[in-house]
Length: 340
Image (cartoon, rainbow, N blue to C red; front, side, top):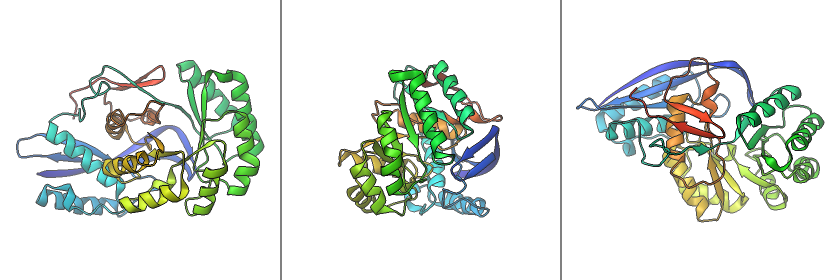
């Protein structure tokens, strides 16, 4: 086995505002595994600033160490990926492609180009008038599930925006919101939740901080709007830790981001744990390029989700790598290419 690592700086079409600040670019590391017969596969390691434990200047050296271990063993189960979710995801995807000799790593209708995956239209953080314009653009494109980032701007203006969107489109759209840990449980339940409930919001992601287990538990118990855990899943957790979190907090949904929650292995374990407790879930990408997005999209077509998933963010880069992904209406589709 031979493993190569290639850094690649992705440039956003326009500055992106996240819960951890603004970004002009995002660095990915492409992991390529080649076997003795010349079959190869590529995976993407793209940790997020402020969220991924492995993010930092030392990551390249860590990846070189993991690459050397894989070249020796050829067995991912022998490599310690603790707090290296994005690296695990990259190696998993590269290995799956290499072993199949193809970018197609599953055999679902999506992977065969016969069906698309319904996705939500993500409205990025920004000034209120900009978010309203973007919402209208997404609607005109065919999206009928819109997700809004909230909690970073003036509270009243954000709530007025959500009211304006509901007034504009009525019940023709489903609305989701993502708070990125912005509130306290008291503020959420007393001020935010009543408005969201009145607007028939589908769900809110991570209303309070990860460390506030009591607050999260209270929100999940008392909120009339379904609560989804997102940041709470970050890291490489053992099965018993997953079970303890879900048994304590009892969310209505969990959000699965393989780059952040232990790779595909971790995401699958989260699904198993959630299904045993009747908790819903859907998949979301995390600013990967089309290399990672293609793998996540293929995987997400296998997990039996019948509501819109959070894919498609790979389209926001000016220098993305073409992998045959495209959006038509409210679905993401894949036309398989021969590029590696």
